[in-house]
Amino acid sequence: MRAAIRRIAVIAVIAAVALSVVSAGALATEADAPPPLLGHYITDTRALYPLRVGDWEAAGEKRYEPQELGVSVRYQDTRRPDRWMDLYLYPAGVMFDPVFEQVFRQGVDEIVQIARDRQAGEVHVGQTRVFATMPAAGAGLLGELAVKARSFALDMPMHDARYRSALAMTVRDLYFIKVRYSVQADRAADEDVQAEAETLLSGFVASVRVLNTGYCRQVLQVRAIPQGQARPEALLASTNDGREDEMWITDDTVYLRGEVIAQQAQAARLRDEAQAIRDVLRGHCVAPDAMEMAVPDGMREIRFEYRLPPEGSDGSAPRLRGQRTGVG
Image 1: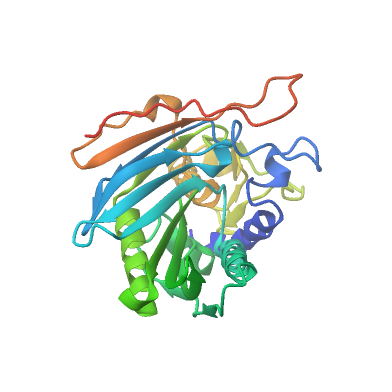
Image 2: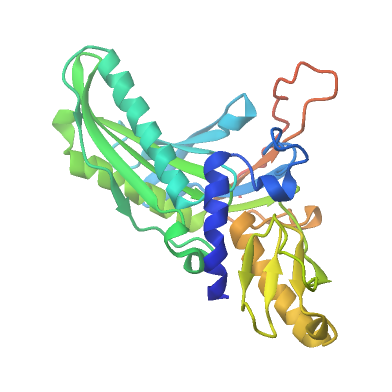
């Protein structure tokens, strides 16, 4: 399986071209019109999130429109009721760390620019840092391409006072997870604010569970490697090159040698291995009938249903049709 890393870099390049979607070769019907993320690649999402993370307790939830903006949850500090953090969960699509780093830097630049545009005083920008969270499924296979968690802090003037503000962010299961936290500068140090944002994000990532379905759910079909022909242009990964158990993996097919396909047990094993590689590269999604989850105590469920605009419409994003279930 490790040999597949040789081909994974191709996907990182694809992701850099289109953050919200997936490979142009495997999915797009037209080179200049890749399919949309919401309503196509993802049609439904179920998310279970914790009502408490350490000393922080969920105090409210807000959905946004358009649907790309997702949902936010406000966590209140049970020790200091005057402090809270806002955590945002919204669609990211297939993403690898080189692209995520660019997205994070862009977010930092926008926050800094907004603070400076107020012209209310000097803005002091801290250092961006990478911090540890529970590894995502397949992180070992992706290596340096696996998305890391990042944070930064700044000191800025706001509302006739100075504030320390932190941003912490990562990606899990095709969704961005982002934490924003601001405290008056005379009540906390930059390091404390940044560390608390990181801790909340880490705790949330360790507990949250997200299930997606849509075109992202593909069960690989098995076909024979064509003799004397070039590999498919939409190849995601290859492994065991030149060996009997060689595999070529596309978005919906694994190509095996004919003599291997004739051995049902070995073919089934390799198909399962290829499926695991494909799901790491494209985002693990489940069948529609596997979307239901029990809501345990201390968790809350959010449901999103994404639909494409009807033909003949102006193309504007449809309203969210998500249901909210009660607290577990």
